[in-house]
Every structure is written in C-alpha cells, then in structure tokens.
Image 1 (cartoon, helix red, strand yellow):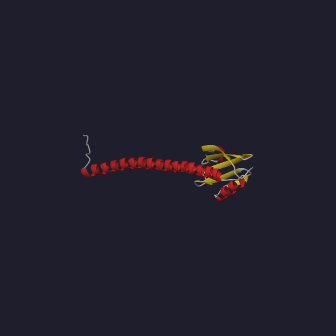
Image 2 (cartoon, one colour; image 1 turned 30 degrees about the horizontal axis):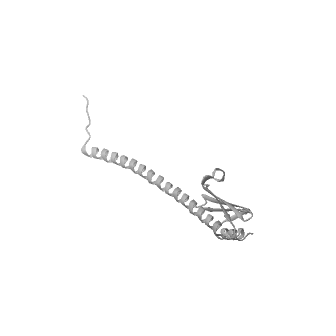
Image 3 (tube, one colour; image 1 turned 60 degrees about the vertical axis):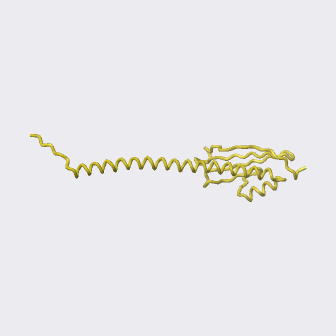
Length: 142
C-alpha cells in the first residue's frame, strides 16, 4: 500500500514564505544593480561636465591674457603644473581626468590646444573626452 504524505497547512505556508523570500531577493539584486549602474553613469557624466567646464575656463584664461607670462601665472595659480615649457597639466575628478594645455607662440599669435583625457584605466589607455584648439593675438607682444 502506498502512503502519500500530504503537506499540512504549516508546511505549505513555510514553502510559500521561502519562495517569496527567493523572489524578493532576486528582484532586490536586480534593482540594486540598476541603481549601481545609474550611479556609475552619473559619476561619468559629472566627469565629462567637469572636463567641459575646465576646458572653457582654460580657454577664457588664454583669451583674456595679454602676454604668455600672464597666461602662465594665471594657469599655475589655478592649479596647473608645467612639466615643460609651453605645456600645462591639471588632474581632477580624483585623478581620473586630466587636462593638457599646450601653448605655441608665433610672433603675437598664440595657439592653445586643450584636451581633456579620461585616465580611468591608466595613462597608456587615456581616452580623449574633449579637444579644442584656439588662436589668440596677444596685446603685449609687438
């Protein structure tokens, strides 16, 4: 004779609670991964916005100056370092982003090349986020 054991009401309730916990655990992990990715995207967008703002700031410094010495003084006063003559660098965004500004002078015409790089994966794999080149006639040079 086969005896079939029937689940009691208490066992069914326990099984239902376990299934509900598994379901809500899976939905919570999916929701948390979506919010985590949104947070990462927000940080990336903030870095790109900072790159644009820093680039515009550097361009305005070049456009407002009368001499290359004035440009150098303003840039170094705003946190730029100069590893070599005519080249300036600044890191921001916890070191993930780097701006490079290169100045070349021909008579009274100065050319500034500004590029913002995403160095999140190291210096060798830096991706340019923003690049712009401007020309400005210096007033203090004759």
